[in-house]
Length: 156
Image (tube, rainbow, N blue to C red; front, side, top):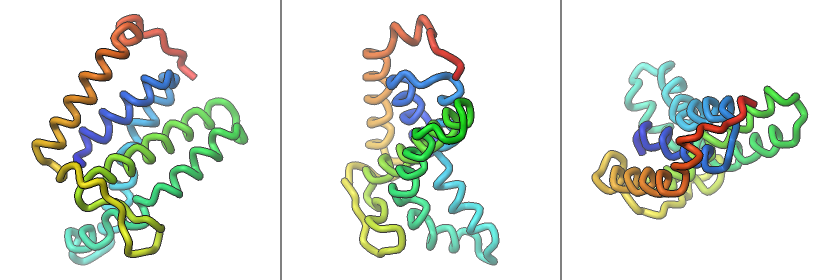
């Protein structure tokens, strides 16, 4: 999926789950982090695009890493502010993987395995992706408009 879909859906989901404002910023950043990891890894290669195509949606897109990070942050080991930020970041990355699971390419079943899981609902950048985003935005507005209009969010 495109970054706009990842960021929008992740922030809408976090808002709907009543996450604090600081967490929403971390969700926004985390929602594209798996792709950023793949891009940074490819930057060290002679052929960036080829390296990106070969490494994209492999280990960085395994849900287990992000779920583990979320559980660790949710345990409250670091303190209120770092835990809030790390929980949001991990939630954003986890939603990234869930959304990529909806595409035809899918995500890895295991972190270093070749098998993938895909719901095959849409292709990245297709009309179906943007229709999905529009439906998510409409549902978000219908269910969260009161909270949005009042903006009664704690900072942390």
